[in-house]
Length: 108
Image (cartoon, rainbow, N blue to C red; front, side, top):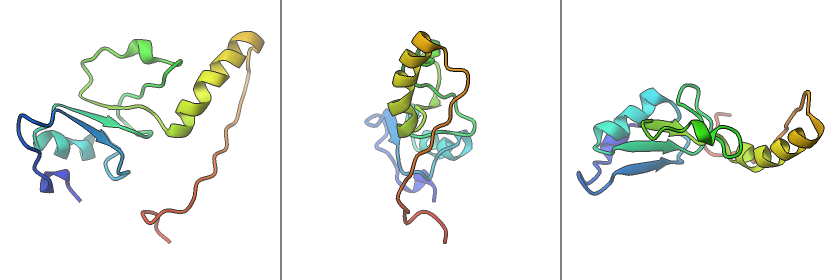
């Protein structure tokens, strides 16, 4: 599936919040840019897009990134809490487990 099938109204759509789960890499998000948008924000982890998480590295965001990820929802829920605990007690190693329901996008 390519987002170019959905021609964005040139000049009206500047930003795409990509939450379909289909466009999670820079290469796949290029089709959004080809359709006329200026910036793509991926709402999950990406294999190659710059990734930002609040309380972790949001200060490294420059504004020049065209395609970027805000990490996963689980990461965004956990990182502020872990940061506070780490600053107080110095976490040496940690593990996070999340359980998600089966979705129609997953292959059987």
